[in-house]
Each structure stands twice: as C-alpha cells, then as structure tokens.
Image 1: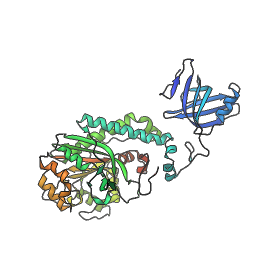
Image 2: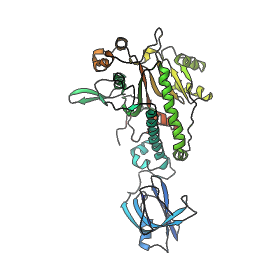
Image 3: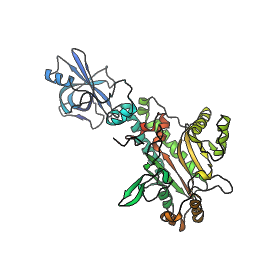
Image 4: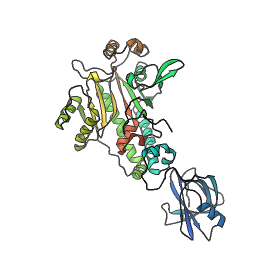
Length: 434
C-alpha cells in the first residue's frame, strides 16, 4: 500500500512512511484520537489508539496547536473510514514549527471573515483549499495560454516596466524617480510591442504586470494586475485579431474545464465553453440596446459599468457569455488605434465576459504620417515619442493587437465577487502591504 502523492511523502526502507504538513485539526474521542494533517494536495489521517501508542507520543501529538508544522513517521493501515482509504499509525514525529495561539483567522472554521482580515493574513487565507484552488486554476490558465500562443506561432517577449512616457495618458501614471529623472511604471507594453512589429518578429506576446494609478475603489479595479498582451502583423482587418483571441480563449476554457476538474469541483464551479465565433455588436448597436432598457446615452458616451452590465444581461438571455463590442468612436480611443475613414468610429473592439470588459484591442495606425496626425489630434507632442515613431518611419507592416486582464478573466469565469480574490497580494488605493 502506498500514500505517495508527491515529495512530501517519503517511503522508508523499514516499510514505514513519513508524511509532512500542517496540523489542520485534532479530534480527541477518549480511547482514540485523530490528527488531520494537511499539505498542498489534501489531508491524511493520523490515528492514535491510546492503548497502542506510546503515552508521551500520544500526549505530544494530541496537544499540538492547530496549524503547527510536523513530520510523522508511521505504519500505513487500510481504513474504510477515511477518504484516502488509509490511515497512518504514528511511531514518531518531528515538530518543525509550533503555531502561535490564537490563530489570526481559521482555516477550516465555518465562520465568515472580512476581506480585509483575509488579505491582512493572506498567508493563512491561502491555506484554505478552496482559496488555493483559485490560484492553481490561474497557474493552469497561464500554462494553457502559453500553449495556445506557441501553437499559433507567437514568440514570448518581455518589455520594460519603468518607462519614459505612458501609452494611455498621464492621469493614470505612477511617477517614479529614475536617478534624478522622471519616469513612470508601465501602464501596458503597447508602444514596445508595436515597435517590435517593425523588426520582422510578426507575432509576439507578453504576460507581465501593468500599473494604473486609477482612483477607483471598486470590486473590479486594482492598481497592479497581470496583463496578457499580443500583437500580430500582416492583418487585413481587426477581425483577424478577434479570431486569434477567440482561438486562445477557447483553448484556455476547454483546458480549464478538463484539467482543472478537481479545483472546479472544490469551488463548486463549472466552466462554460461558448462556441466560436463570438457574437459581434457595434458601439452604435449597444446604444440602441441600452435605450430599449431606458438608459439613454448620446453618441460618444462611455457605455460605463452599468451599461456593460445591462448589455451583459441582454446577451446572457440569448445564451452568450462572451461577445465583442466593436467600432467605438475614435475620439474615445488612444492615438495608436486606426480611424475608420469617413466615419467618427475606429477599428477597435472590447471583449466582454458576462457584462464586463476583459480585453481591449484593435487595428493599429501603421502609417507614419497618419500616426503623427493622431498624436497631435489627441494633444500629444510627437517629439516626445521619437523612440516609438522611428520604428514607423522606416517601414511598418499593417498590424493590430490586444490586452487581456488575466485576473478579470478568471474572476468572470469563476463568478468571483471581487478581482482581489484572484490576486495573491492585491494593490489598491488603500493597500500597500502585505
């Protein structure tokens, strides 16, 4: 019989095994006691029949503070009373670390704990299997993302996170002192990934941190998050980009549904995999949809959180969790987005998931003169972007790309109440520690 699950379980030459982990619970039932030991992969029962166990060993094991870290050496016995179908009868143990009493919060106690308490004690919160499952799914999500990008001919890159200027504008930039010169934390790799299109590296992607100094204290905003950005050359329209994103997300959702079954079951969740292609709504169509629900916006208005939510409800009624909103007014989009000639619109899109935007992108303006015109139109000084514009001056193919918020996507997939649930150590307006 074997209890080998991973490196935390060691089989010994004398036929005994050593198991390691945290003391999750101790149950004293008079003549017999149980220590429930937990590691990353689950729990195992240490059974202590009082009359068959050394008295000192019995006393020490059954009086340990919960969450203490120990190693137990013992014999494996079959048991139809445990989930694993086995138990450990201890012969000896090592106390590696005794937990202080009382605990800052419970691990298995069925008591609601405030979000701030959980985040202040994140090391303890992450001991909960259901919380840890979120991050195991996040890790799997990134593994699947890399698979999909490699399969579609993309190369992974890494661009600077301390930059001289921002891609989105100054109001949400974090300013830092760079050896006496002003610099900023990167809002996105936008300018750099476009520059790479001029090199012949025609399909690139990056997974990395992004920083937004947004004064928004909501359940969907944080100041640091993980962004998945891609850029591709030789496109004929923004539909090429949208089709690529659909391929990647379809691979992720199918993979999570299959390979993440255990974690999803622990969370009581399932992953719906919408058929591709996803429906496409235009910005103008969205205004009409909102008007039909009594929300009247004028041309050029931001759809806003409430507008996105209403559209999400309408699309959900039609069985669509994922859908595109395309051709936004060019006045509302950054300088690098291509205008739709002869109209007030642009070749841009958002991908919404259950009523919330998780991705933005579009076709870029690759023509040098037009790009300079766009900058001036947006009130920017092209001379401040020479490092970027030079890549367009000497030959740039048609291209486009996207950015996807990894945590936002995971939160919508799992129907979590707050984006902070999907970030190990969140950063927001009030939280800089731990």
